[in-house]
Length: 259
Ligand code: SAH
Image (cartoon, rainbow, N blue to C red; front, side, top):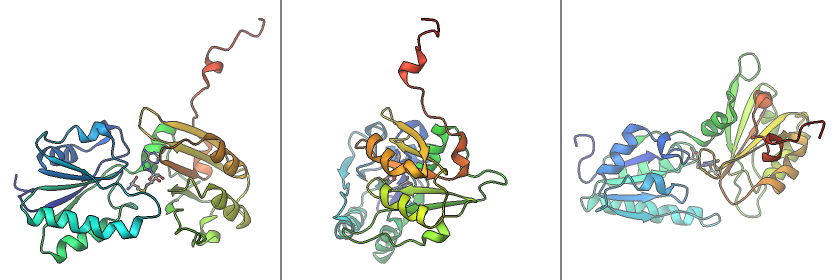
């Protein structure tokens, strides 16, 4: 394969979870790899595309151990390439969005290993698709801001809240589950209206997907009551006004008014 010689690395975006949301290129590279290093967020449906003879290594990081583990992952993928493997480093969503792609690219280049990136569908795009909305909206949301609300343990989030409380923007908050309360409080105190539409999407594109539509003033409570264990993205802004939440089962089979 001319774009994937032995001894090279591809950082591949696995998308949000649904294997049909992989690019064709990603599927081809996964099938051609002799070694696959994947994140915790990559679904089994994607991993089954690998060659049965390939070695699959879960390098999923857990919160709190991030930076320490990153160096070990860099070293592992580079060592595999130097040993002659065709290495796929599979990352959830898009490798270039909160995916530590830069560190891995730098480590490979420093070792003289050829490394390339195959983009993937990022969580905010998958969440917006499930909600049936556009992240940008003519005349309403001219700006899309991707932020991570993941802070080092015990440290406050270091973000420019007054810039983020922009009524003409859509905010996509990654890793924001634990920080939903602080995100809401900071945006409210920076002047964002409590009635600003918010959607929380957990496990976007996966069978366990959950969508919850609310308002900024209720975000903290909603995040606490609605979220399970899966990854979740918060979307905040006027563009979310038309977001669709699945009808409750009870509402679908509602008894006639006369009953
Ligand atoms: N590179 C990834 C993001 C990695 S950071 C991407 O482009 O999507 C991990 C965060 O991504 C999670 O905490 C969550 O906020 C979000 N995320 C990833 N997959 C998701 C999914 N299927 N549904 C909702 N959020 C998801």
